Amino acid sequence: MKTISDIKSARNTVQNWKKDGYTIGLVPTMGFLHDGHASLIEKAVKENDKVVVSIFVNPIQFAPNEDFDKYPRDLQKDSDLCKKLGADLIFAPTANEMYPSKIYTKVDVQSLGDNLCGAKRQGHFSGVCTVVSKLFNIIKPDKAYFGQKDAQQLAIVKKMVEDLNFDIEIVPCKIIREPSGLAMSSRNAYLTDLQKNSALIISKSLNEALKSLKFGEQNVGKIKNIIEQKIKSEPLAKIDYIEIVDLQSLEPVTKIQNDILVAVAVFIGKTRLIDNFVFKMERE
Ligand code: AMP
Image (cartoon, rainbow, N blue to C red; front, side):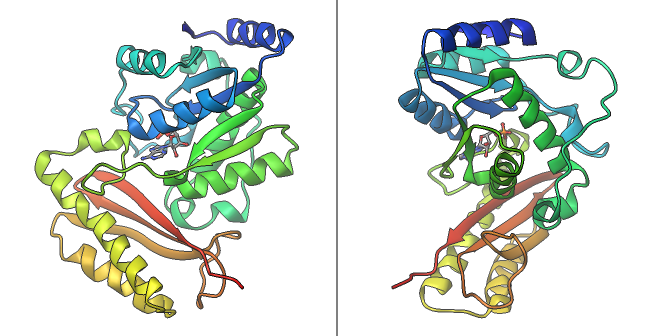
């Protein structure tokens, strides 16, 4: 497995693979890899001849008050894992390689980016879509793998690919959790043991909401209330948002008629964690 940090060499490597008729899978990440990322890489290895894992903490998707500087990084450990999983190339550019000069062109994300995390993180999804487009143009993969953990990101990237005619299949991957139920995240590394224990309230609250939906509850307010009360029972947890939105449009729903996404963002101390589930309406 190679690790490359410059765009030209990454392009050459992939171009040579393509000349030999290999299919290419791309797993875009910000590194500090865990089993959630590993599940994406494993799927990519199964479905493609060559797999590229990009590791890049993208400055333009962080607001000035966010955690860009302290975001955890460990390229050596990441590269050991990628090698073990059978990836063929790590593309780990510096910020200067990706943004050598001020950029004047960004992907503009419209309404899908207005709610949920988009409402809380100004410019975040424009930054995400810009870097994902750059990675797509550099690697030119056949398939790219994204986790349902970042449900809004997945929906926005899928729509971007459709809107901008990228010839790439977006492969969604399910959320991987710790045995405790906590959704895996590089940001879990910020948590003390006590905070990690408090963070379990997030998946517990979502499980309760799912249970009530399965029992036939259709009142959006009541479902949100179940989640809110549960999270509020944990003193270290502070709700950023609780949203129930249409799975396609990501617009808030008042009635549960179509498939929905139930998504939350919660601060545990200074660490902002997100989690979600999809509830599909049964149709005859
Ligand atoms: P990140 O490094 O956080 O930008 O994540 C890179 C990719 O891994 C994104 O597509 C995420 O949705 C996905 N991912 C992160 N955590 C998980 C998880 N717990 N389960 C599944 N996918 C995940």
